[in-house]
Image (cartoon, rainbow, N blue to C red):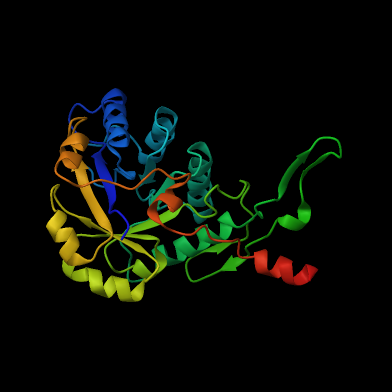
Length: 277
């Protein structure tokens, strides 16, 4: 059995939080063996707006850390899918394959589910080997390796292609909160252990994390989840968590590999093989 996945959640709006204090927490979590950090700025404190926007903070922390995954919260609801896909793909390049996107909880209209599908389609705009950088032949990328999405859906019409190379992970890890969007996710964050069996049935390829207090190892084993999310308030918390007997997984080249998720092939890869067969 694989070691449990261990993710820490940083409150980017905590009183007194500065970039230095958040960097200290991130580095301590990395040193303690945490697999990922969740940078969630979607909950605003009553006192006013938070100090840091999550994707900007993730870009800065990517330069201050080496191995730990960085999962950013849902971007503002009015962001177009093209911009969401571009920002998350850029973060994955900056972090060398360590990025995840917490897309949200879902909605009755299916807008978030369609947003996830469009973002994944845009990440496949270029084949993995599209960019050749051949100075001698004057060829930067191959035209036949670029693909328009031409998505027309209930909520979004998006032509594409994205103007960013395919991310290092193919698709950055897509996380969701709650069971509603489990079938669209790579990583599902649950508050209620009773939801684990149902999510496991609907999304057998996804990893499931319980958002529980530190030291909940018995609860993890009983629930059948793949790991835990614990809140990290300062740089001493990561060591306290691991000292309580909860540890993450060995280092891997990308966040997907570390979580045990496969790297998806581009949606046009099979068509290219068929065309050349």
